[in-house]
Image (tube, rainbow, N blue to C red; front, side, top):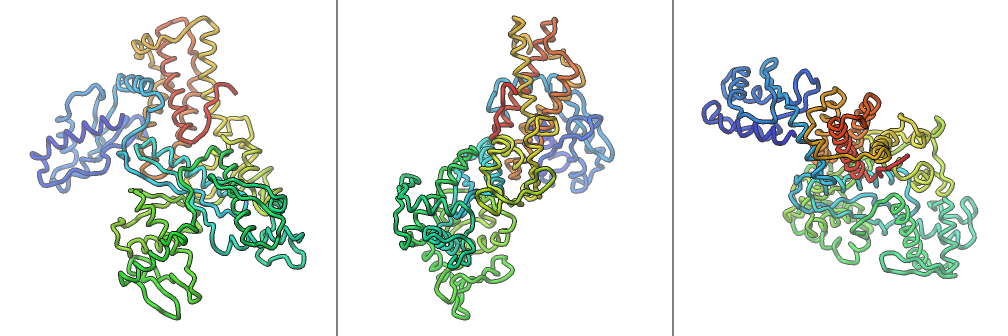
Length: 561
């Protein structure tokens, strides 16, 4: 509803521009915002205040001129001036009735928009090192990244979901020697155990599978274990494949899927890392010092220059990061987003600096990042730190097994990513109104129950009759629910634009509250057919928006609970 009203206001301003403010450009930002107080209308605009000074006009007089020039519209019941020059719009009841019809006609597409205009965006998330099971922090990354992908698709972007495997470097070496130690019969703490070895029980599982000659298939490639505990290269390859498979199974249980799996090692074998370094040297953005090769990253906004190649000839970790993100641009991602733990925020500036130093047309600020904080898991008022399998952290699979996929996904995305998150297992398992995902799903199940009861009474919902009698929806709870439903498209666009999927989670809880309040205050299946069909139309529209919002979160919409 906001967009047609804003279009009406913008066209009015263009009409008045030549007469009232010929030398002042119209604001590019949205001209309207939802009113917090219903007494101030449905929408408010401060455009008269914004234009008054550059136009040399009194704000209230300018507001009055704008109102006088507004063409008649079925959307608007009345317009008022408030305070120093705010313009308050009160929408007509028919505007909300028309929105109910739009919801039912659009169905699963209601709330979608064309913000992305079909452009390509790559969303990289999870990207866990294949050195162990996914922990709950990876789960928050997965929930945020997957929901972000769903949101961007709904906003008209062509989305590719990508997982970047760090399958090279010191951590993979530590994995290999840990599995080798287990294969030789050593245990953590025993003589000969690697100082930096991984201690979780899953390492013993990998070693047992390797010695048993188990075969592991990942992305069409199959590796088989062997009885030789001395072949470290074979152990390394097998362990990485085994853990990649385990992570894939965890993500499948979480209903998270990827279009592209990109291996860090391919950047070396394919020559992209060496090519990136050569180009940076050729552009004159590097220098030698203390036997190392440095990037003049301070020229591109970094707080200090960065080592690219150490004195021993090995590359620092940000060099393959630059090569990798360059590959995203080369592969056609007009926009690239990485979901990244807040503890890695320091890499943002140096990667962007490296991309700008390449001078290959990549825009400043590429890629975008969505940062998130880690998760504290609580049970019985106490923090849970230990996994039965991983040893020193709570795994994603254990959380899903304990509270279910829907609750896990919702809880991990319900707060803004860069805020601390406490995951209360007891709350997530509870069947109470305090559990937000239960509360939302229960709203959907209640609606399904209404239509089952309707059929049991031998009645049916006549949608056309309901559409003819929407004027009967005059109760305050009905009006509040219609307002809530109309907010959904705005929330989808804002969440997609600002990379904030938590807005959808919060909105759904508010919508569920409005529905439950309506349900508790009124009877839907009444004798009056006109009123019954009108109310069922509102209820059906609520069901559709709940389904659409839950789908953006990857959470199911149950018919019964």
